[in-house]
Image (cartoon, rainbow, N blue to C red; front, side):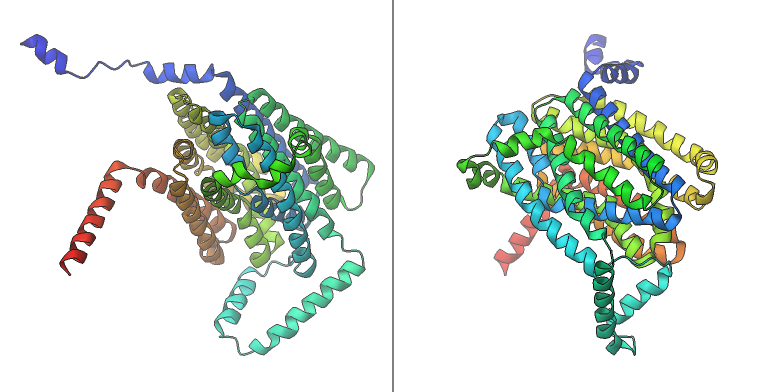
Length: 474
């Protein structure tokens, strides 16, 4: 009898199982390459912005933050979700036609989006001032019809248009950076997706590392040999290496044939692609649209304060990015990576604590003029844990081709972030922007875990059956 009871008992858990899983995760070469590549990419990328904060004024720092954010945001349009499509389907199918068609389509769309964005920059330049609440409230009042001087809107727009044209003729070259910025990001993103889809994790590491080394090297050269227009030269230093490291993308682009123009492989996966495009667009929006909104409505001064804190967050988000980059092709190929998931969550918790505790010392030491960025950095660091959990669930759902749920989660998170910026920013300024981003990550985590759950599915099916019964009775 005792033996039967013993059989029904749950298996004894090993107290060292968590530690063993962490150790196994640390021995996974693919994840180590991806994490190391993302680490160098984030650290040197953050160093790029930190150097800018050191050698530029707050307004000029806000200038490069604005135009780089605009370029990253608009580049998500021509990518069209094809980077996630490659990472998901190439490990399953191994079709090179998907790579060629994706390269051709993103190239054509990149040119179109780049030209449109350049026109936007010409006619609607970002304001330099920082009268934040007045800009936003005035805009809302104008839209609501509550401003008695509504009739002045048309002359104001025409005046801005005339000023923009005068600046263009007089030497305004900001629009020149837009097209190569967008194309460079598109080429580079697709080259990374190609490496992940082929599970060439070492190449992923090389591409990320080489890009950042070239960028920092160019910044050093420009700083040593030129003292004028450093903010514009920093944009050049950021953009030029994108083309250098995208050689695999050009291999696919230059190998297209007539069949590629039919886009058969892309069209066959269009539903998934559009869902992941919406996800990527929302994800890019949460990373860069917030800076565009802050720069446009609140001014470049507040943007400089917020963006310095955000660069620390970019470094802290290495783990969530690495989890998604590595787990998606692995799970799509049929591998299970429980050890990597546990390792990622443990590392995210440690990074959150370090970011919260070290932010005051690092900013006071390195950037004494950015003391307002300290509480912003601390609040942003709290977003690392929910972001890591959301990345794990995203990789699972996309590998199962349940992209619709992922799209809903990222769009909802974007809405939370934008509303939070506009509402909380009015009272709390840069700290309010950080709260908005943190809440968006929490919302994303909850949605991705709740919507696919069996309990939620049963509840949804029960409601559908009740609704059908009511219809039949009526």
